[in-house]
Length: 318
Length: 318
Image (cartoon, rainbow over all chains, first blue to last red; front, side, top):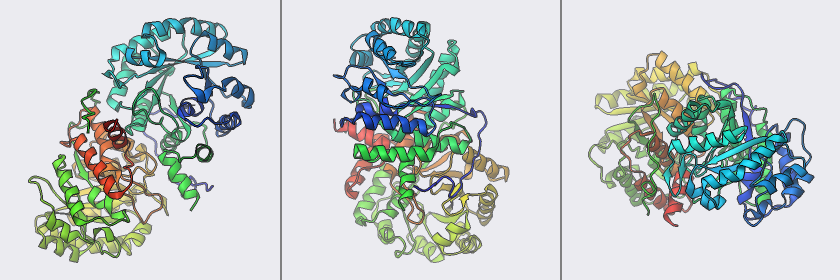
C-alpha cells in the first residue's frame, strides 16, 4: 500500500483552542463488531485487536461479557481475551453488564472495564430491560468492586443527545445520570450519540452543563455515530471545549441493533485525517489503520463506510 | 415518505459565533451531474432543477457551457435552460468557460454565471489546458462583459487547500488568484477543496488570509468535497469565521474526473441536518430535498452517498 500521507504532503495547520494531543478509544472490536451478523473466528478478532495496538492505539475496547443471546458475535469473549497478545502500555477495556460479567473479567486479568448506561428510560428499557434507576442500582456493586480491585471504569451514557423514541434528550437528564455514575466511582464517562442525531450546539451545551456540574472535562469522552454525517463536526466542537478522549471505530464499523438508523460509529481514519491536518497527536499510524480496515472489510465481505479508508485504499490500488 | 423531522423532534441548540441565516449554493445539477457517466434526459434534469427550487433553494447552479467533448453530460445546456421552469427569486448560475460560452448564456437570458479558476498551475494545466495567468487572461473579458450586462459572476478558486500533484497549496497562491479574480470584477469567490484533503485549521487560515487581503467575507463561499469525510467539519469552521455562502450538492452527487479520489461534494442534506440543529436558517426543506435525492438516485441507478439521505430514506421505508 502506498504511503499516501507523504506523497504528496498536505501539511499541518493548527487551530487555536484545540488540545495538542488526544487519546482515541478504539471501539471497533466491541462496538464495531457486535452488530455484524457474520460471526468472525476468534483468531481474526485477536489479530484485529493486535493490529490496532500495533497501529499505535493505546486504548482498545476489546469485547463484552453481555449474554451471547443478545450479542452472538461476542460469545467468544473469554477465548478472545486468552488468545490475543497484549502490548505493554495498552489498555483493553471490556464491557461488563453485571457482577457475573465482572467476575469473569477479573478471573481473566482484565484491568479496565466499561458499563453501558442510558440517559433515557426508553432505551434503558429496550437495551437493558430495566429502568434507569434499576440499571444504576445494578451497576453500583460492579463499579464498587472494580474500583476496589484497582480497575479503570468507563461508563457509557448512551442516548445523551437524542433518543429515537423520546426525541431530544433533556440536558438535565444527561447531567443526572452522569453525576450518579460519577458518584458510583466511574473514572471516565463516554457521552454517546447512539443514533447520530446531535449537532455541534447540542454537544457544547451538554459538555458545558456537565462541567458546570463539577464533572471534570478530563473525565469526559465523546462517542459519535455518523448516521447523519455529523460525527466529525461534533467531535471538533467537543475538542474546542477541551475534550481529549474521542471514541472511534476502525473503518467506521458499528451501529446499534436496538435503535433504528443507528449506523456506523465515527471512523477512526476520518478522525485521524482531521487530527493529522490540525497537528493533534494521537500516536496512531493512519496508514497502518487503513491497512487493517481494508483487511477487516475483506473478512466481513463488504467495503468500509469510512470516506478516508475509501480514498486511501482506492489510491493504493491505482 | 415520513416526516422524520417532526417525529420525533430533535430540537435546536444554537452555538455562539455562527450566522443566523446562510445561503446554500446548490451545485447538484452542474458539479454533481457532470461526472455521471450515464447521460440523463434533459426532462429529468429540468425536473431536478425545478424540484431543487421547490424545496426552497434560491441559488441553483444549473449547467455548464464547457465543450461537450469534456463534459458530455452537460451537452444539453441550451436545451435545459429552455426547458425548466424558473421560479421567481431564484438565481440559476451557469458555468461558462470562455466568451463563446458567455454569449450563448446571454442569448438564453442567463443572469448569473460562474467561471472556474485554479489556485495551482498543475490543475490549471490539466483542467483548463493553460497556465493560471493564461486562464485569468481568458476570464478577464468574460467577467468584464458579464458585469457590463449586469450579471452576477461567481468564480471558483479550485484546489484552494490541496492539490493532488502539488500537495498543500501555499496560501499566498490562493490569495493571489483571489485578488486577481476580484480585480477582474467577480462578485463572489467560491473556495474549492476539490480533492477534499483540507482540515479546519487550514480553512480558517485561508479565510483569514483572504479577509486580511481586503476580500470581504460576504463575497466568500466555501466548496468542500467529502473525500476524506472532512466537508462538514470544515464548513462549521468556515461558518464560525463568518462565511454565509456554502456550496453543497443534493444527495452528495459529484466529484471531479480530473483529480484522483475527488469523490462527492458535501451533501446538501448532511449540511441541512447540521444547520437545522444549530437553528441556522436556509429556507430549504430537508424532507423535500431527501425526496428529490431519492428520486435522482433512482434515475442514476445507485444510492445517494449522503448519510442523512440514507438515514431518512431508510426510516421512510420502515
